[in-house]
Length: 308
Length: 280
Image (cartoon, rainbow over the protein chains, first blue to last red):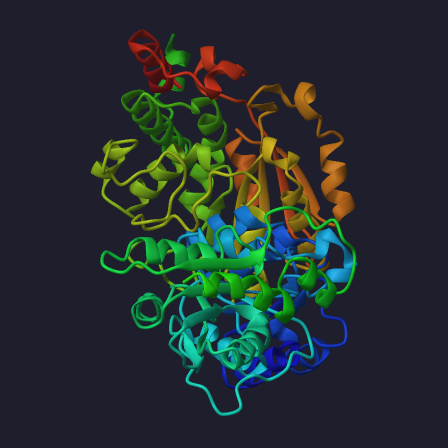
């Protein structure tokens, strides 16, 4: 996703002089092409995320489209009030980009686990929240947030995620992409677990549960239509995210389902338990520990589906 | 006797007269709204009067003019003075000043840009203004645009780490189109700066960060004018003007009292304060 983002950003900066990139002293080995090509529109502000965000809002106030870039929680939680006051309240054209959503930096420890960002930023007025599911979505999402006026959060995975979409996609902010269709249940995924969602769907289909898979790359505004269609047209709805089960995709979909007047559908949230991870290990290891590996997901869904 | 009469007749300088009107207005606004922060407002007024009277290049009929100088009141709680100055300059009707703290009115209790021409950015949480201003100044430098940025900070907000993040940034990027004006009235919310969290040696800190530092009497109009007219005081460096001010300046019983960070004048205090401001 990281290279897809930078490739798209370079193309955008080429054609649009308003594009600025501000980094918080991170991105070694990947931001240099931008710096070399657009030195006047690049700043490494140093390890200072509050300043990073305030500067971005100041630049945006003069007409710039400003991408702030750092990893995990640093461009989000460290400077949250600057995002709320300086960016959101002013509808500043600032695009906050975080590399390392969820357990991407698993082995680096708790400080580098970005597991509440979606919930927190989703609560901020004016903020659009996007978490693409694969490199092709990341590329399109980068273009989409640049074109979308106002504050956006782009939560990316890391490098090397598999491409899930085999054909070109129609990426629109606020519109889920259906990756598989099915009747037994709908698996709604956000962010880098999309490949996992597809694997799970394939395995469930093998056991007789045909599964619709939605890539809910935009958490806010949520594609309410896609959620309510899923509730009407399939027999269960399950959300999947590499994020706390509180307030992220699961929370957003639960809010939506609870307000459906004439539809009652069995619903489960799969995500990270709302406690600090006490295990140390890689992204795959921590995903499995949190119940987010394909095996663990299938094992937890089978009894739920059998009981329906 | 003759001498005294002559003194009285001596007209105030335009800045002093402007400052007098701002103080009177702000006092009325705070009294009517039953709000607070008079001490913090009054310490900024003489600086504001010079800025809005003769320094800032702007056009009230085109508040969004892209090449305007930017002023950010980072200490957003002192907004009554800013609102009064903006109104007098013609950014919005004077009648809006009566809508301070009024339900459904135009003026919020901290500097707010929404629906209010002339307020560049909304402030109120301390430690935000300098980074915003540095971002604007960076654009002017990088894009060869001529506008300048002035940010007024309180001394209390120099406790905020974010202020020092921006303080480190601006000289490194040679933002000599950026001026920080610190309203150093030496009283913060809980007591004197010295008691709460001492900033001294204050000028030396800014100098060490790379700023061109000027220390002035923040109530001496000719000193304020001379200093603001000559920024940047060193090419290639942002200017930090440490304005030594008096909290509550202009009303004897409010001066240097932490109480007047909070207190709303009662009718008698209002009458006395207004009388002192008329005299002054």
